[in-house]
Structure formats: C-alpha cells, structure tokens
Image 1 (cartoon, helix red, strand yellow):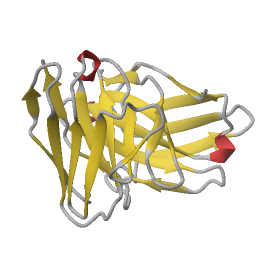
Image 2 (cartoon, one colour):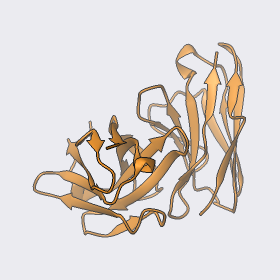
Image 3 (tube, helix red, strand yellow):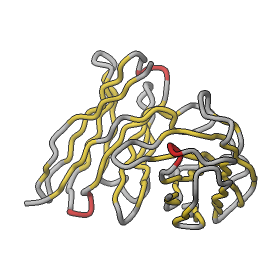
Image 4 (spheres, each protein chain N blue to C red):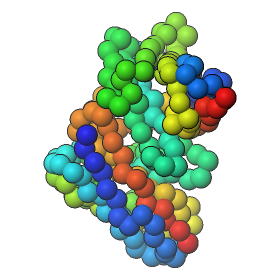
Length: 118
Length: 106
C-alpha cells in the first residue's frame, strides 16, 4: 500500500526557508497530484498547494508568494519550500495524495512538526 | 475562498448512539464535499467523498448526505474507535478548505 513519509528540520529560524520532503513508497509520483497541508491549533487544517508530475502547481493565495512545491521523479519525492517564515508558520505539516477526481486527500503521511523560533 | 462551517464544535455521546455532524459551505459546492476522521497525534483518515460515497474499507455505520451548501455526516451506532475529530473539506475549487472540526467525545 502507498506510504508517505515527511522529513526535514523540526526547527527553523524566522525569515529563513522551511524545506520538507515527502518520500512516496509503493506508488509512482507520476500518477497522482500531491499536496501539502498544515495544521495548527488556531487555524486548523490549511491546504498549502499541490504539484503534479508535469510540473503543474496550484497554491493557496495566502501562501503563494512564499511557497514552492516540486517533484523529483528519480527519488519519488515531493518537496515543499516555504520562505521568509514567521512564527505563524509553526505547524504540523502533512503531505497527502490527492485523487484526480474527486479532489480528495485519500492517503496522508504521518505529519512532521515544524517550529519557527530563534 | 469558500468557508466551511461545522456544527457542533464538540459533541458528547455514548457507545451505541447515533450522531450527526453538520457542515455548511459559504457557497454552492454541489457534491464536492469530503469527510475525514482524525485521532490525536495522527493524520486525518479519508472517510467519504462526493458527499455520500464511502471510501473503501470505511464501516457502513458511517454515512454522508447533502448537496449544495448543507451536508451531514452520520454515524449510526457509535463504536469506541469512532471517538475522534471529524472534518469536512470542499473540493470544488482551490484553495481547498476545511471545516474547523467537530470533536466527538465520550
């Protein structure tokens, strides 16, 4: 069965770039859309964006100026880069597989906690 | 953005109870509504898509209904493993948005 595993630093300094990787097992990244979603106690679940193997992306307007999603087919990984972070970016970050139709998130990684602090 | 509002925010119930959680969209999402279950420290689990279609493997005590702006998730007979937080999510258009969650407590 498909498995997703997020990895990356658990602590990022303000103004720096948050970089996370999602490694996909038992499924090719070329077959689905891949999303990042974050969760905070205050704002709940927040969709960040998705990337398709073609390179097509779509981002939340609230984060669009700071976020980049990419796919590395050779490593079967999906990456998230969020620059100029603030404490408001402290959250649990999930990667998730998005079905083509409907646009539902049917497989999730376990999530990784990222704290933005100096 | 389409705003999703769930009610109630929390709900106390007992094993065997029938419970209903409501989700309202700020604009018409047709049938593009999904439901998830999340337990503490875990990722959300996909339950229902297109308003009423159960994801494979989800017990039949779960059901969804609604269209347009008003949707419901019903659990017909609560089991101990059902105590969790439930979220709705619209998939009509990006940015995809989630409800704030309904915490189902014993």
